Image (cartoon, rainbow, N blue to C red; front, side, top):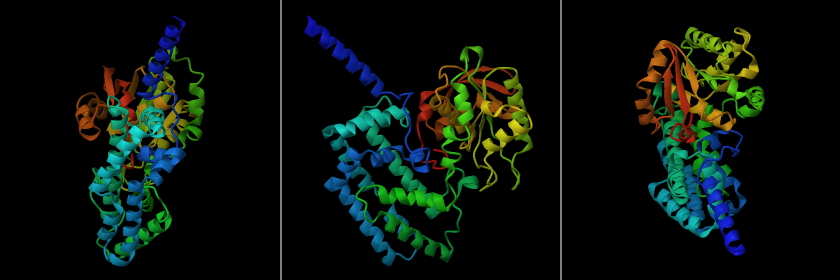
Length: 416
């Protein structure tokens, strides 16, 4: 009987561990300090940082062979290529390579406990692929690899070839790809990437480095705006949250989406100021302990102003909202990700996840959030990042967080 009792106990504990491993863990701490790489390519970041798995990948004959072939192709491009498209084709991951890597990762997952542990305790626990949490761990690993490989190729296409992004008026390449000087610049970029990765044995390193270099020279490192936020711009609010009596408040946060400044040189538009005033009114009424401002470097093209930061300044300096009551999301570029990014911060900072929040904005945008925005979210994100609650007024709309919001999107590298 004692042995049976111990067996039942072991099974119960094992089941409990499995349940934790198969779902996002709210206590999990993301690695990478909010870098552009970790925001866009969390699986590849994990593969780099985990010593056991990295060694496994570097010593695998097939995978290290891909790394060697990529390095050789990049080296030859420095003498053989005469236009920018030639260089980029040497840097992108081919369909054949992506399929080969998927097959090897599948086999390594089955054979090696270190890979299994990384997937369950880091990749799944992080929530960065929460949209696929109903798949098996091995399927999630392969899905994450394929998505991040597509993200690398797309980033190179947009920021080294001039392919149009989803929002070309604000997210396009910074250079004229038809200029002869651009071909020279691409030679210099390829030479730099080769110099930095020529000794790597990681199959993805050269292509990943290329994607990050092209984002950097285009001044498109928006994914890391204000990072690490929890240690900087959001530190006071995060510290305050640990002492908040949440039962005193109807809502977790008052989300104030950004309104693009418009003309070049303008830090905050009139519409942005008005939205801040509405949010401040609700805050001083005591509806929530925090206001969350949301908006990145969006309008006009290549603006230097971060909407969320400028709204924060206005709330503090003009409307006298305490700095410790303001959280910023400095990445969102569209209304769809205002909500998504806000939910991510609520989750990562340990705020109540099942409690309602409200958006506070102008009548037009509030109506859009409460009606047709769900269709756009399905088209662009593949899911709806909230559950709508009550419509409180022409300017306020309740919403509830969705765990799928933790899903990263490497196909939108400025706001993944």
